[in-house]
Image 1 (cartoon, each protein chain N blue to C red):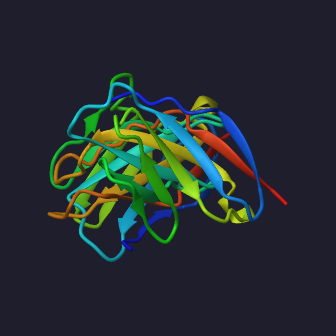
Image 2: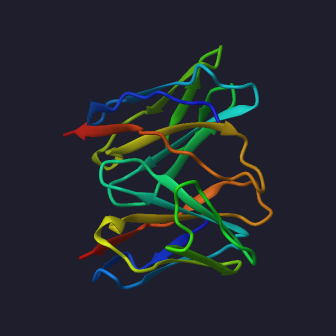
Image 3: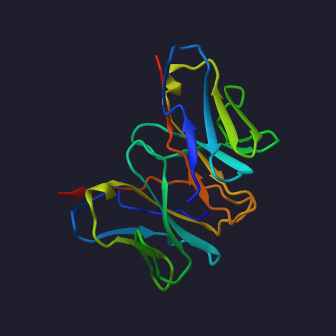
Amino acid sequence: DAKTTQPPSMDCAEGRAANLPCNHSTISGNEYVYWYRQIHSQGPQYIIHGLKNNETNEMASLIITEDRKSSTLILPHATLRDTAVYYCIVRVAASFGNEKLTFGTGTRLTIIP
Amino acid sequence: GAVVSQHPSRVICKSGTSVKIECRSLDFQATTMFWYRQFPKQSLMLMATSNEGSKATYEQGVEKDKFLINHASLTLSTLTVTSAHPEDSSFYICSAALAGGPGELFFGEGSRLTVL
């Protein structure tokens, strides 16, 4: 799986959009960008994933650059409950027998009241 | 979404004793479960892959005789930390993949082990 680089920490004001960047310059054509988050002392939670098109769900939006070498996770209206460590993971599409995830160091996002 | 439950959520034991942690998929069958370990302020590290009805596959550097994994059914995997020592104190997290499904992982709440 391709290596990712994320800033170690970020702050964001409550109610504002939180934009979390991720660099994955060695990504391969068949690799997806996945985002998970881990709230303190809990298991990771799936947020979103995408291949090359921008994606949006009820939790977040994922913007992938045209060259796919970087992406941004956007939490449109951050709340205090969004304080967590966010992991950007690049991997081939999840499929039966290929579910293993390798976690990097992630970005510790702190939402400021 | 699919629910994965771990038990116990917290356990304290004396050095030299063994501790068993259970991981259950509550509303789906999981052919494969994964066990991760996380030390304070560090990321999750994969310990082993647990396959129903067969031996677990351990990551490099993980002692299989110390961390016994049993995946006896499609809804239950157990991790036993044998002869626990203070350095085994950690947050243990399991995840499960939907059997025959698209391969997305669902994570348990984690189990915090403290060895005195």
